[in-house]
Image 1 (cartoon, rainbow, N blue to C red):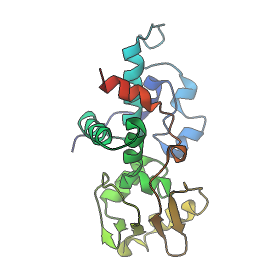
Image 2 (cartoon, rainbow, N blue to C red):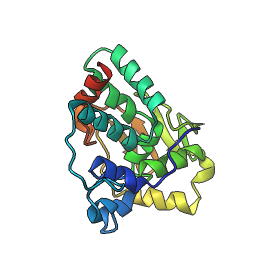
Image 3 (cartoon, helix red, strand yellow):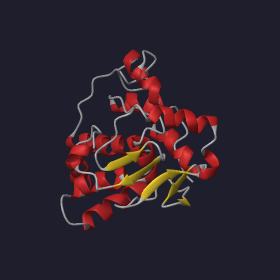
Length: 208
């Protein structure tokens, strides 16, 4: 599976914004963008005039990096969103939010989407009682996300459960802390999605 394996702090610096790709580290003074708030590379501090296309491209790249997906898969999501009824940009964000790795992150079981993706791949979560290890699995309304039976006694999972108990989760998820399960009660609305993305710029880019 193709994936980015380079330094993730470099991605935040390239986009000029915190993308919170390293979880807890991003909230500390160690965050790279706090130390060097300019693009990486020898020309990173140069002043550049950005074209309309460049602005749209950066917004697409930002969305891809936040959710940790590459171009081919992102394009597939866009085409699917474009076929659905409603506003294409909002449909795109809803699809990205419904990815299983993102749901695990939203529930607080991972400090970042990267950590949540790894937990899913290692088979620590179930959907409707069946183990699912595909991070891109799109959850549906009514489905129940749970911790796999074989993982519940893991010290790491217990630590994540304790962390999740103190996290505010979006309204489209209903967490049962006692049973360590969460039900998808609605499709996420645009107000529920707090990522710093101007989705209309992505639509304009793909509409060229």
